Length: 357
Image (cartoon, rainbow, N blue to C red):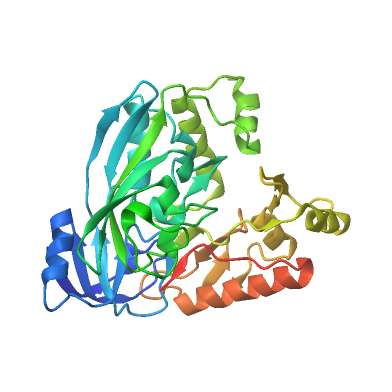
């Protein structure tokens, strides 16, 4: 267990916000978590789990103990007639883990290529893109209870996945055995994920239902793409639409796509016929948050050093550089202004995706 004090966090958050961690612990094994909880100087203190820093907005120096997740490892742990079960350490870079599975001949994660962040953060957010969500390929995970130092495992049902949501984003309620977690019991701040396992199907069929992928099929003439081809297409699509955090600081898609009832959608379409919307299996309609923001005139606009990306209104970016970087306060001021505009025009409240620290 490596413990550091007053650690600059600018390089550890993709927005590039200047801040420090009062205490940072580099977690490179499960034993490091146990050692942390046995340390009298650290045990019992509030913690903040940091993966790739791609889904956070830091609004000041971080007082909780920062657990920088650096557990590595990629391996096939089981093979059945129907699937390959692949395990990844929580500190693995998500995109690199996806690329590894494809290279090994285990398809299924290709639509999730180039999503920033680490493997351990993926179940927390139930990441998704181009018609696939993590829950569609999830098998189980291992974690450690920070209150009791007990290791435990969760399956998909116990993680209570929903759109960009999981049990790890909700505050703890009543205590319970992890083997029989009640839906709604929160684990935010109580648990740290150490390993994640994916169930990748042998009877693989490509997910091609998104317009961007359909355009790639039309452009290339490839009607039955391989997993590798879809992986490459998704990388090309995302690179064309989204800024590279190494060049322009950002946290990816800043707002969740809101869902409305069919009646609400019909009412909005009557006023805004061009609104981008997608029917969902449960009968609700998902609206494109980027389209709503763009319709309110925010694309390319700036408040302080926080701006709306010119190519994709769903992405907020850092217009500053180095020590003269955007502040978390500027980012949230811009986000609130966008929320107000969208609500006043459409009657819809946009919900941010990133965690505000």
